[in-house]
Every structure is written in C-alpha cells, then in structure tokens.
Image (tube, helix red, strand yellow):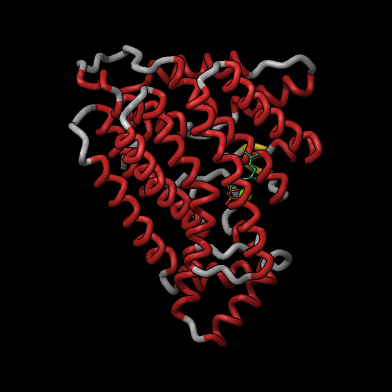
Length: 336
Ligand code: FPP
Ligand code: MG
C-alpha cells in the first residue's frame, strides 16, 4: 500500500515552506474570523492539490534535469502561489458544500457550519475565496490567476448540476461523468496544469498536465463515491451520505444499468426514501454491495488511472515522476 509520505518525499521542504506561506496570507483581525481561519487551516485534508502543483511544476520545469538533492527546495514563490490558490478554492468549496448538504462532519472533525452555524460558514467560504483572488491579483502573476480562476465557475456549475439531478433522480452515466468532471476533476486538472504554468513550461507540457490531472481527478471522485458505500472506509465522513442526499453515483448507476425498467423504478423510489428512512439506506447499500456495483465502478476508476499513468510514462524518469505515479496508485487504493 502506497502512503502519502513517499509521494511527498521529493518536495517535503517545499511543503513545509508552503505551509508558512499559506499562514502568512490568511490572518485577520476579529476574534471569530481568526478562530474560524485557524480551524480551516489546521483541519485541511491531505493537501493533494498543492502536492500535485509542486510535483508537476518540478516535472515540467526545464531545471528538472539538474540533480535532485534531499532537503533542497525546488519551487519558486510563483508555484506556492498556484498551490495556495487551488488549495483555498477547494477549501472554500467544501465549506460551502457542507452548508448545502447540512453536513456536521468533515475529515473526522466538526464542519464549519456545525461549529459556527451556516450563516458564519458561508461568509468564511466567501472570505477565503475573496482573499485568494486578491492575493493572486496583488502578486501580479496574471497568467497564473487567469489560468486558475475560471475553475470557480466550473465548480459552481457542477454543484448545481448535481443538485438538479439529485432532485430529479435521473442521473445517467454521462450526466454523472459530467458532474464529477465539473465538481472535482476540473480543479485537479487545473492544479496539475497550473504547476506547469508556474514554471513557464511549454504549451505541450501544460496540455499534457491538464489531461493528466483530468484523468486523475475523475478517478479521485469515483473512488470517493465508492468509499461512500463502504462501511469500513476511514474518510472522516459518515458512510452512505450520497444515498441520504439522493445522489446517484457510479456504484448505483452500475446496478441501475443492469435492471429492468420496473426494477429501476423500484430502486429509485427507495432512493427517494433515503433522506428520512435509514432502512431504505441499508437496503440500497446492500443491493449495491450484492450486485457488485462498487467493483464495477472500480473498473472505470482504474481505466482513468491507466490513462493518467500513461501520460506520465512520456516523461523521463525522476523522483517527481515516480511520486506522481505513486500518487495515481494511492488514489486508486486509498480508503480515506
Ligand atoms: C464535494 O462534493 C464538493 C465539491 C467537490 C464542490 C463544491 C462546490 C461548490 C459548493 C461551489 C462553490 C465553490 C466555491 C469555490 C465557493 P461531495 O458532496 O460529493 O463530497 P463530500 O462527500 O466530501 O461532501
Ligand atoms: Mg458534500
């Protein structure tokens, strides 16, 4: 089992410097705002997006042919800025998502809305978004800012599309792929290509990293949706929340595609009961498990992983390429 330490290894000094950089950007007067900022900065997740930015910047930098030296930093401030922007957009989007989903837990800790009520959590998300944009503009790295900022609109489109389909209970495989591209893969794709943009890589490299990030991001969200059905995952979120929220994700789509139209109708009716009836949740969870929905979804997830790693195979061997290949394996195997 690949662990994140081996993935962080070639950029460990950069990640430490990045944490300092990040904290320097987000300080505020006022007791409540300071308290909320301290919480969100310390309750962040695995920092997958900053890791991707730093590794793809190193992979595509023309300085990559110089010898890697343990403990030495590779990244410039421009790369930290890109990493900060994608990480904070992601953090803001999850704070808003927890308000929308009325979720009490995030990464094993109380969500911002559970701690400070939705009205403060919404403002906190807005504040992070606003600070991120102004930090980007103040740095005058306009190419980088314009590369990243469009992803906010894509995330919003994904969220609304998901709401619409959760209400109508009519999500097809194509709808699902469109939603997960917009809500997750787009920002991971922007993270991977922003790393390349931050080191002035060639257009070809920026495009390859965009494609790499898109494939990895699709796999990442499919795995997230598989883990939601798993009773033993360690995600820090209650399992089967997607069913309670009425969301049709890939493991359930795999089952629905095998059903007759009558059976499909019956399962959709059960899904409508999941918001207020735990026995309906248990029933659908059992059907998905028994019909192999998770294993079938894992096949699609693995095809995206294969695509992501095949893009990396075009690059020369280096500690950064190795770490990115390990990241692909980690995404496919993770249980958190
Ligand atoms: C988590 O999905 C949510 C997202 C990946 C995107 C949410 C986007 C918005 C709320 C749009 C607003 C954007 C900004 C930048 C303020 P999930 O609910 O499937 O995952 P979960 O189980 O981790 O909650
Ligand atoms: Mg959610």
